[in-house]
Amino acid sequence: MTDHIVIIGGGPGGYEAAHVAAQLGAQVTVVDTDGVGGSAVLTDCVPSKTLIATAELMTDMSTAQELGVNFHDHQGDAATTISVDLARVNARVKQLAADQSTDIAARLDRDGVRVVTGRGRLGPDLTVVATTADGEETLQADAVIVATGAAPRTLPSAQPDGERILTWEQVYDLTEVPEKLVVVGSGVTGAEFASAYLALGIDVTLVSSRDRVLPGEDADASAVLEDVATRRGMKVLSRSRMQSVTREGDEVTVTLTDGRTVTGSHCILALGSVPNTADLGLEEAGVAVDDAGFITVDRVSRTSARGIYAAGDCTGVLMLASVAAMQGRIAMWHFLGDAVAPLDLKKVSSNVFTSPEIATVGWSQQAVDAGEIEAEVVTLPLAGNARAKMQGVRDGFVKLFCRPGTGIVVGGVVVGPRASELIHPVSVAVAESLTADQLAHAFTVYPSMSGSVAEAARRLHHV
View 1 (cartoon, rainbow, N blue to C red):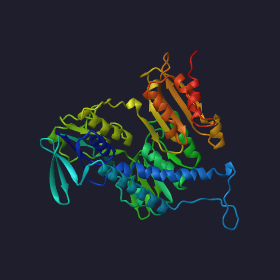
View 2: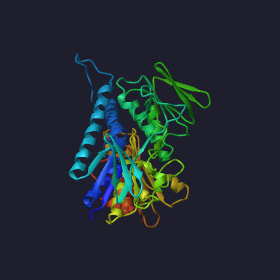
View 3: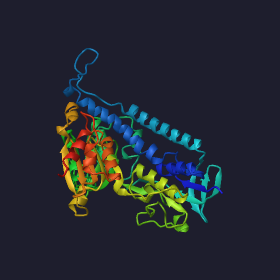
View 4: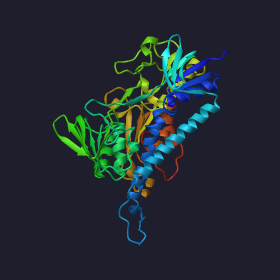
């Protein structure tokens, strides 16, 4: 008898689970509200990284003269400024997101997955009730996955209007470049947007309630980013907690708890996320949630209710598209009896798409300093790398952590251009418990940024 899997939510946690379930011979139905791909594809990860791709190009062009490249206007005079057409950028962002969603839908269709457009909620006895434009449909399931994601957090004192006070999902409707942008929140999302819009030539002020930008990241990496950002003209207000955001005409005012005010033409709120778990029938189904509304799951994505799994941002485990996708896959491997390894957060690589990028995997400097793990640490600045010199790169570093005695690599940090690509060899080392010597002995291209990863590993060698 064929198992029927019903998935509520078409984001990475949902559609990756659907692919695995279909591959293993199950009948699969996805109930999706806003378009497959979820917020990761339509309003969050794909759009923001597309915007950042333009910002990266602007950053590269700003350093072109140092590398011997000059720009001239049609009359032969030196062109001294570059500008961005934000309407065209955002049109491209939205088109690319829509195209990605279409591609995902086509792949689901090829796998034989049925997609129901509507809102799903849990019913009794492992059913899902889908409310569609044509009415209600009850779907009987052998297993259910809840993958409903999360939404930008707002406050009563800081309500977005979609025009000048914006969540990170609303910025792509801007058609004119903001004269002065205030970003509230210095976590990953706030730092990424502040960095991107700064590179696009916009006056940016970042309001941070903590003593440094990116308080959850490696402190050395945060220091490099803040140094680069302030050098490029960003104003960073640390230890400054927002009390309210108000708008009067074309001016937005951010009032801080100490009475200071910051004014701008636009404000982006990056205050964290809240799970989309209301009105899903979770309590009636026996699915436990924590105080913040996130669904409680174990390392194979099971909830407290038999036959009901959950994946992605609605679980609050680690709010990354890659983790959501893995949680969804693990749920299906587990339920359908395939080989499965529980989720191991110490093997998750992540990246902050600022300029420079910050990529991390495994154990952190904070954990080492706190005595949670004993590790030897080597930090190697990128400034000494031959390829970095050729490209005019002066900021950034490679940091590796390895266990004393065995030399097994247990973590790493890369700060620099395309750190998201450079972290992969370190991720492989951490995932496969390679030693620093094994990492060092793999050939790297000369000259290359990745050569610094091997060089850092060589410095961890013990005679």
